Length: 172
Length: 370
Image (cartoon, rainbow over all chains, first blue to last red; front, side, top):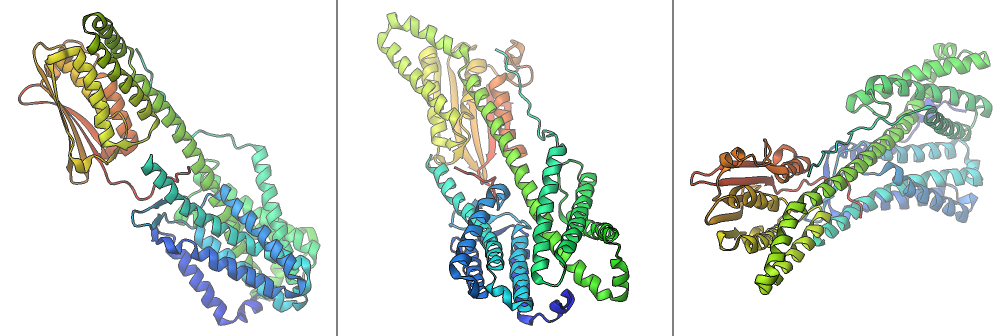
């Protein structure tokens, strides 16, 4: 088995580019920032589609139904977990339809988790290609992918819901 | 009537006992099993060895961070912030990794340190991923602790708001005012049934509005003026031609949201301590105007003035009545030092009460869930 350091050394440059993009997006959100309404759902959508596609493609031999179902279960658990994490902590709608979101380390951590999942699973598949046929590995990977996608979706839902709450307050 | 201020502890010290510590340890252990599973999936390593190493290292890193957190953070649930948080996790990782690795080595009679001495790259290859997992897992715990603290604060704020509402209601439906009005009504029923009816209508409107207002966090300034008008109408029936009131609300300010029943205690105060005890005609001017981003609400009376009110032993001591103390407390709670209530004598006689409050709402507020 190659050492982890060798794996890291042989990682294609494109992966590090992807990591730096994710880190850059995460770092920007350490500070209070404004997000236009149209962008609220884009990140969970991209991460969701990419993770489902990644799981289906990576574990094609394990059965699309199982992988898809596990991804959906992971997404549901990830979505529900925001009941405890309650992300984002500080958010408020603006008059022009955008949202102001308080700076937090949470997006950076979520993006790093997304990267770690993809990286570890990619490495695992590269070292042991037979894992692609293993239902247990497919289930574990799909659940992990789903968790972060679900959490991101729940975060966006909370951002979006502040608009409705504010509208209700004004109408009252 | 005496009303005692209710103080609410800002940070209730919840006991963090053994059961919670046990639950946390179990959660960390589950995470360690998952990490061991990932390493095993990557292949090569022996599953039992991997499990033991991952538990030893994971639990000792968690133990180091938890201990450091309690020493640095003070409270059992508090996490430090910023660079203190980063260094806590960094130190916890290094110390926990060294201790956990040594414990696991002892169990298996092996020395990873000797391996690392021969192949330093291995240390980097094994410690690196440990740091990555450690950052993500402690980040998750940190976010959860923050969310929990937020929920606690929210619950306290709700509790405080409920008490404040009760207080407000009590101060508005003060028996003195109610009994006075009813006594007047009783006298009027025989003398002037039509005016009695009119007064009763105002009383009903006033009671209904007070109840409704006490349930809201904010209402338009126009409503606030309407409530004061109801109150004035009641007083006018009582004082007759002696009271002349004049209200000025610019149309562009009508929709500004303000906390309910801010103005009315000022009006009540002006009548009770300024105009009513005085003989002859009394004039009251109520106005709103904008001064930059500040809303200025003024209640000016031509009454006997502050000095006379204090001299006659009105229930004022330093606060000029419970109603005003209450307004001041609510302004402080809602706006901090950005809002204030002042009372000052007027040059032409009488008293001017002035409330200044910011109208710009903060963009970021605590989450509002319907």
